Image (cartoon, rainbow, N blue to C red; front, side, top):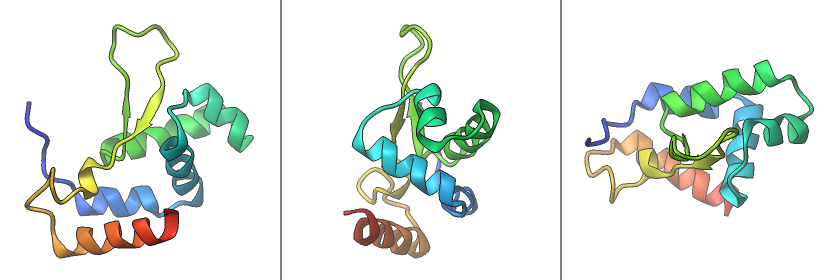
Length: 105
């Protein structure tokens, strides 16, 4: 199934909270389960779950396959901001990607 066009509003919402930016930074280092994220951020499981759902909607994180037993790890997914994977990426999304690369390199 082809990926849908990155929704700039969803990406900006995902990057608009420091906890979600922190989750992305952690997932850029290694895949983690939601339970791992709860321990790293010292917040409730419900709070992490809400942040993860926003990141999933924006396409910024993905879960491993369903065949893997729970808890399935989450992975950082750069595709919404990847011009190679999204040739129709808007100039605004390109600027966001550039900012992310400078900030998290």
